[in-house]
Structures are given as structure tokens and as C-alpha cells.
Amino acid sequence: MTTYVLRRILLFVPTLWVIATLSFFIVRLAPGGPFQSEKEIPAAARAQLMRTYGLDRPLPEQYVRFLANAARGDFGVSYRYPQRQVREIVSAGFRVSAELGGWALLLAVLAGVPLGVLAAVKRNRLADHAVMGLALAGVSVPNFVLAPLLVLIFALTLYWLPPALWNGPASRVLPVIALSLMYVAFIARLARAGMLEVLGQDFVRTARAKGLAEPAVIARHALPLGVLPVVSFLGPAAARVVMGSIVIEQVFAIPGLGRQLVGAAFNRDYTLVLGIVLFYAALLLVLNLLVDLAYAKLDPRVELS
Image (cartoon, rainbow, N blue to C red; front, side, top):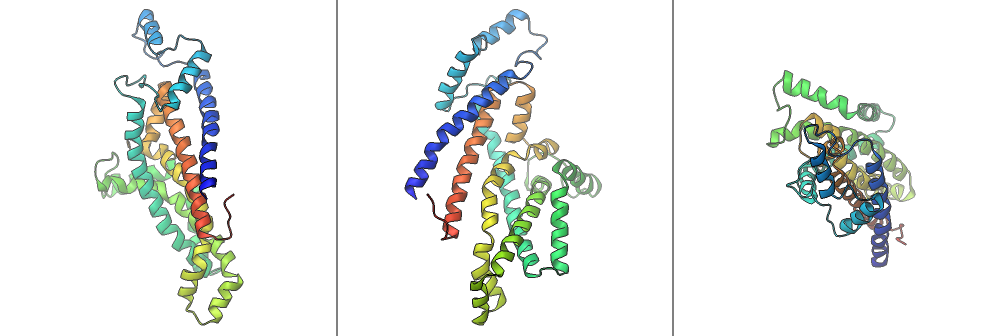
């Protein structure tokens, strides 16, 4: 396993290099520039800003300098907030996004797995149809529709919860629900499919033949293998939950990483955009590795090679 982990870590380097290269040139080729929207700045001052940040240099030179700095984890300062380092902004935004994503993913697992197991055990019965109907609705309704609906109902009509911001436990409720519902639906469908496959296998029938109660058969024999599709889904989902909360963060005015990325893209804040993109890519690679290790741990048939 150690060799496998080291090999995967070594593969991180070329993968991140490709992502960094593509991101650098895509950002540079986008129309506009970081200081073009500052209409009050005289041309001489704008030229001075370009020299200060090295943007007047040839593109290959900028690229080499960017790679050298990125290899040291240094993305420089934000063009929009020149008093702050990019890594400070990313760190602050990630703490908020990680908390939001963590609660949403936890809620998705705690709700999705039992619902999927229930649907599999009650296959083709009312409970199964009800769970799959809710799952279909959860997958079909996008965040940008669900989030304003929740605000309208629970904040602006019933006045039970605050409509926005991130300043207390009550302010977490609506964003977490809005972000998690789609993942509840996905996890319920995956858990149902995994459990249906496992429940028909010989070792489950043998456990039943030995006289074990049905809850014990499900919990001890079927569930560990039945949730494997969910485990493989959780790694990419964790990264998507953190970065996929862009809409939720915009709707609820949450100062997370997704909102920072949207603002940086609009402002042509090259350093901040590249810092967030590479941070997200590294996070995705690490989470995928952790999921592969967890998968091998849960299923002895899986060999890491």
C-alpha cells in the first residue's frame, strides 16, 4: 500500500502541472484585464501597475515565473486586495466552505444511506417508490431554484430562520439543507443499487438460513458491501460540495471559497483565480486517493496496484 500511495503522490505533480498550465493560459486569454475596469486610473498609473505585477512581461516569462512561485506555494498578492496574500484569502474562504460542505455532506450521508437501505429492503413497495420519487425530485431541482425557495418560505414568510449571512448556528440551517438535498438523492439511489446487488448474494442468504434476524443480516453482512458505491462517490462529492457551493454562497451571501472564485473571475484577479483553481485541484486529488484507500479497506477483493 505504501508503494501505491507514493506512486499516486508522484502522479500529483504532472497532473497539477497540466492543470496549472491550462488554467494560466485560459485566464490570460480571457477578454479584459485586471485593471481595465478601473476607469479612474490614468494610463500612466495603469502602466505602472502592470509593471509592478509583471504583467508587462512576455507571456512565456510570466508563465515560468508563475510556475516557479506556484511550486513554492506562493501565488503572490490579490490584484483586487493588494494588501492580502492569495493564500490568506484561500485559507479564510476554505474554512467557511469546508464547514458548509462538511455539514451538508454529513447530512447527505446520514439521510441518504438509511433511505437507500430502506428502499432496497422494501423493493417495489410503497416505501421504495416514495424514496425513489423524492430522490428523483432532489436530483431534478437545481440549487439556484431550491435555495431561493427555502429563503422565501422559511425566512421571508415564516420568519423561522435568517435569510442570509454566516454569523450563527441558525444561519447555517438553510444553506446546509439547500446544498445537501441533491447529494441526499444521489446517495439514496447509490445505496439502494448497492444494497440490491448485495442482498441477492449467497452469503446473505446463508446468514438468513442460519437464523439471524433481518436487521442483523442487513447491518452486519449486507451494509458494509452495499455502501461501497456511496464510498466511491464521496471523494469527488466532497470536493464538489466544497467548490460546488458557489450558487449557495452567492444566494446566502456566505464568504466562502466559491464566492471568492466568482468575484476573482469577474475582477480578472489572475493570482486569486489561479490560486483557488490549483487549491481545488490538489484537494480533489487528495480526496480521490483517500477514497481509493477506504474502498480497499472496506472491500478485501480490491487490490491496490
